[in-house]
Length: 257
Image 1 (cartoon, rainbow, N blue to C red):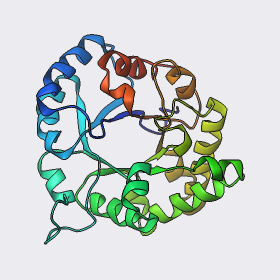
Image 2: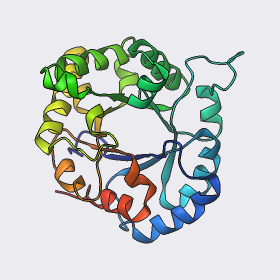
Image 3: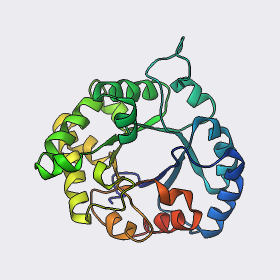
């Protein structure tokens, strides 16, 4: 982490878990375990129907509410879709785009991720743009080529001013929900590579201001080591974000010199 230049962010991704009625007790328990002085921004990305409750109760812990996906369309006859304007209207400050599960189960392309990111930026919402390689791609030594392509495509048409509101989350697909985690050195290598890609496009100053998160099974046990890396500015947390105590341990792990 490098707080001199960029924001530290711990973002939870609840996926299709929890209920709106469970948010108040969750936040109450989280509040009991969080450090009095936080050195990071806490974000909890929930199913869209739960965002109003997160906005209401999350204020107690200064939690920023986020969505888990968004439509590329502004409005129209797109049954079941949710627009960036609708997310902004209920108080979402962040939204995940391009998560590996969306790419795999819904066939989302890199260009679609780009369109969604731009739709969010147009409504003042910060996109958390997910990138990452499969196990086969890593074993073929194609990690950086593939991730670089994802980053370049996702940021296409986004200017340096808009870049300030973008967050990149590196999530090696082979480490999501498998219990496997990239070593701190592996995670740092890719996050450093992502920053190098951004530097080549936008220059050194904008690149060093972008927060890059690690999203491959960060948990209470490995968070401190991962967050000690210079180019890892936080985490996109899955399962551990559903457990207030574990999640608070990860938040505490950001308090490093």
